[in-house]
Image (cartoon, rainbow, N blue to C red; front, side, top):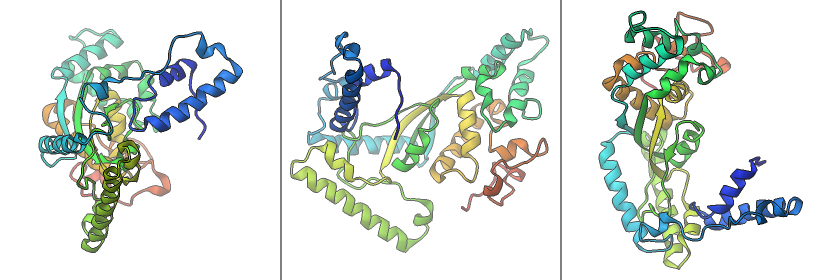
Length: 331
């Protein structure tokens, strides 16, 4: 890949290069980046006293390092606790701005300079969220993040605990404005297989048997390396993309709304689709006035503009907008 970054970011990476699951590889890659910069500007690093940090609190404060035997025991206990709190969900709402509707309405009035007597809370929210009244909601480019009135949605925030596969998490991270606290795998490793089963495989007993056997083999290979003294950092390279990732994720309604619009489309990766549907459902339960116009592009655009579906030749073939959110995904 081609990686472009500012000098200050490179200084930061150089300083905390060990703050990851793969400190050895990170040191090698970042060290080479620093070496190339020094070839053209020797003083860019030498003029500052910013040597890499050796001791990081993630390891020190947990009283365990990436090579200790307690990592698996603690990792399995953490997984049990986290899963119990999810109560069978992919994503669970754990916190939200309790006064969000009122605050969002006040923020909108502050942008457009209206008193409450001229624009009630309900009217302000409808102007912001109703796609029939707000053209920003219909755009295929996410221009709303730059629109002054849409910034009122920054003041409504939601936090979710979620469990998805490494594959889904790689997709989930594409929504940069909805950041998450993701696990250090060296501290959350488990001795037993811990993975997500895709929907199509879960419904096929023979396929599920093959997958389960492959997962047992993958974890057995990883455990064998650990038993031979291989550092956990390297042994974890054997784990598959179906490895379960447990994280806590937060975002403002402005950025979550964009994510939910994209990820409740039937073309979305199945785990993120399921998580997004669960998140909308839970937001609707606590703040229905903010959740009425949440859904895929076709749901927002139907009876307002064309084309209804923005996916072109990738149209799923299902008229989701007719019965969203009471729609069963079968693909």
